[in-house]
Length: 326
Image (cartoon, rainbow, N blue to C red):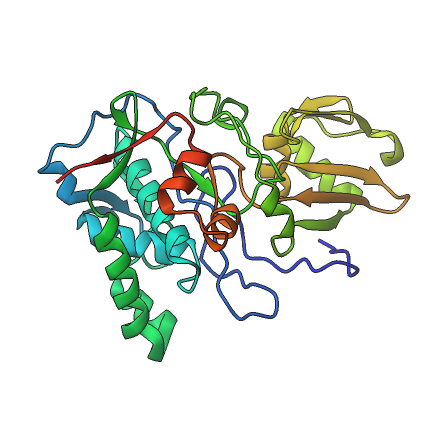
């Protein structure tokens, strides 16, 4: 597909809603890996587990697609490997620790092991992969993350006595999304908050072009109906929700959700606008990821402004409490 050469549009394959992708995106000009959306395979569940016992607090179980089996990890090993996949390791301490606790809480909120791919650095990875990724910087970088994890290894985020499904994404459209608009499940602590810092994230706004056949194929894959007639007349009404994400859009007479279109076209975000310019359809997105829960660029900005990891989690997951276990 064509890409608008007037805007920077280089990015790695994004996790579409709940998929997995290699951790290969680069920040423009910085040579630094950018944060990814989490490798989640289950919808958030408010009652999947109760507060971890001291014994359970010592470990996290994941299903590693790279090995095709479950793995039992220490909490600290999980936190280090999760943070290394989700954020550049030179980001502020508080942002990394907020990510560590969110990842641990999300994993323990699920009724089945969280799916990761250690080989692709998706959701979690191990030392051997990070040695290849970080090279000569491995020892110092890994030691720093271990030290940060040790400080928060007893922390888990709870809501109503159970681990919170503390999901996360790279950058919202300026306001995080409500969980029911993505996964149908409405959780009180995932109803969206302002995240103005995201508007300064690299590639916050990106424009991509699609030909009429490409859009036709996307609509057909969702509905089974092949668009007919002049492409100039395919676009109907677009309705955005309160956060700014597409609630519904009509294309060639078919009413679709923003999440459906995002998945079918591989868009960075369900916050988008679409137009026909006489030759191609242009789609402009804002933000990066599903938009629910913790914004990683927002966490970075808050940390740089002096907020602690506790402050960051309390802001993005209102009504939750940090519980110390172990």
